[in-house]
Structure formats: C-alpha cells, structure tokens
Image (cartoon, rainbow, N blue to C red; front, side, top):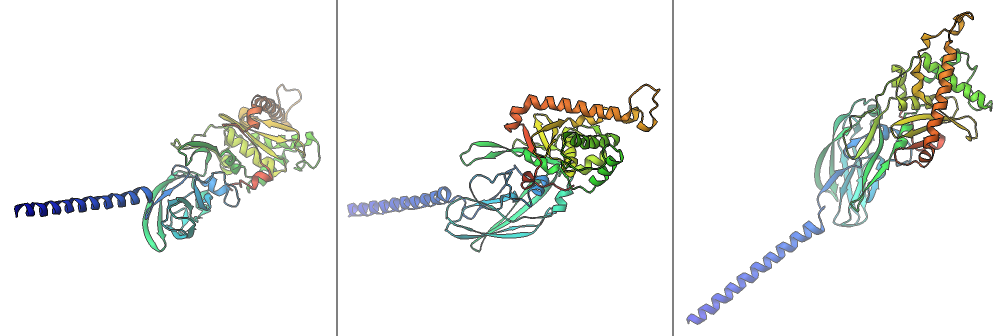
Length: 406
C-alpha cells in the first residue's frame, strides 16, 4: 500500500516538473519572438539626419528644387527626405497603413500624412509631409529650441505620441557638412558646402540702388554683362561694383563662428545680402557671396572658391566661360577713400593720390593676390576635395539651390 502511494506521488511530481518546464519554454519562446524578432512592433522612433538640428537656410534653398544635398538616411525610405524629420518603425504585416500626424509649431503647421509599408518586419524610415512656414524660417535670426511632437497610427491602431526637442538654427548658419550614419554601423562625411550658393541673392530689391550708385560714379555708362564682348569692358563693370562698395565704407569684420556645438554637423555663420549691405561689414565669405550677388545681377557669371579657412570670388571675363579671374573681397576695406582727394577737387599742383586711383589700385592688387591664391590650391579646389569648393553660380546650380531671399 505504501509503495503504491509513493508511485503516485512520484508521478504527480514528474507531471508538475514537466508542466513547469513546458510553461517556462513557452514563456521564453514568447519573449524571444517579441524582443528579438519584432523589436519595433507597436513602437516607433522620431529620427533625423542632422543630430537634432534644423537649418532654415537648407530648408529654404531646396524647397522648390529636386536636389537632395542632405542625403536620405541609410535604409528603406518613404516620403520626401527634404522634410528633415522622419519616423522609423516596422509593421507586423505587409501593406500596413501608417498615419503620421505632426503637431503645430511656430515653424510649421499641423499636418497628417499616410503611407503604405509594402513589407512586414522591415524597418522603414518615413518622412512625413511638413508644412513649413517659410517666413518664420527666413526670420529666425538666432538658434532656438522647438518641440517636435508626432503621433502614429498603424492600421487604425494608436501607437501613441512622442516628442523630441530640436534646435532650429539661425537663418545665417550655413550647413557645411555632416556625419552620415550607415546601416553597416560605419559613418560617412557628407559635404554640403553647395549651400553657400543660397546666400548669393541676385534678386534682392536693394541691388538696383547699388547699381544706380555705381552708374553715378561714371566708371561705366551701363551694365551689360558680356554683350560688348571684350574682357576690358567686363573688368570695368566689375571695378564699378568694387568702387561703390568702397564708397559705402565696407570694412572687414570676421564674424563667422556658429554657436552650434556638435560632432555630427558643421556650420558657419554667413551674413545675408541685406545684413552685409546694412552693416557695411563683411568677412571673406560675406564679401564673396555679396559680390557674387552683384555680378550675377549684371549678367556676369560668378564663382565661389573656398579653401580651408578662407573664401574668395571669381568671375568669367568672357561669355564662353573660358577665362577666369579672381578677387579678394576682404581688401575692399583696406583703404578709406575719404583719406584721398575726390576727383573733382584734385588740384594738379598738389601731391597725393585721388580716390579713383586708390580704388583702382586696391582692385588690381586684389586681383593679383586672389590669382596667386587660386594657383596655389587649383588642383584641390577643382577636385572639390574635403574643405575645398569651386562652384559657378549658374542656372544649373540654381536648379539645385535657390537663394534664401533675405
């Protein structure tokens, strides 16, 4: 009898152990399936390519073009990468319907976007529609935080809402480049120096006033670009622009550092055409984009040339764009014309130089200096090596980068 009872107890114990082990196996299998195979189910992430920074100059300059100077993030992408904001997620079935809602901020309006994910258990980077308020972007002169809030639904199921604080940079900050994260885990540096072209503004309303002042100097009777067809006539038109900026007392002022602190993105502060004109202050970049704006306005094709730590401007002296010369715009402020005799008051018996002579002298010296600069870095510049730039402000470039219009 006792032996029979022991056998029953042992059988019950074995069944308990078996059921316990089976339950543990089921639990572990479930956890492995959910955590390992489906990590993004019912979850999403708000991501961007620029380390939580938004650049108005980049957004404005490509708003009406098809260019992707800031490249899409590595992976399967849906939507328009120019929006800069993205949601990363997976769905648990093919052809899942995703609804993304962006809450309103001072820089964009509320928007709702829908997408269909073709494959299940595949990670997608989805760029929702962003209804940017372009005037707000154009008017943002100092970096400030902005809370980006996004709500996601998948096949009608609410996946919740997430918020992340971004830094909306100043419109005066030009994105030079950024470190792109690759799916392999490696990184790649992407140069975005083409955005300098966004600060060349050949259509600014104040340009007509500057050109009128240049014509009043009587250096040229009219601005006609390459129509006359001689290098001397082109050079004389360029000198008239140089002269009027000297008469406006432009001075060198090295304000180029950005407040940005990041190991992902790199930027430089650039004065817009209006800022430079109102302050009569320029550094090498400001002077180059300002002068390029004036050159393009009179029908002369300008070129921006950059080497590490410095930029200068060039221009073609012929319509076929075979002959190129350069200017060091920081030399505009090397002399104060008020220290010299005005042309109409220069007495032939007096010793000294006239304002016209000094202006022309600095113009010629600027050309000589910039020509030597270009010769020293020509190979690196023409190859667009890291830290170097050679870009014509042509119709082709304008199809990629528009002026930010300020």
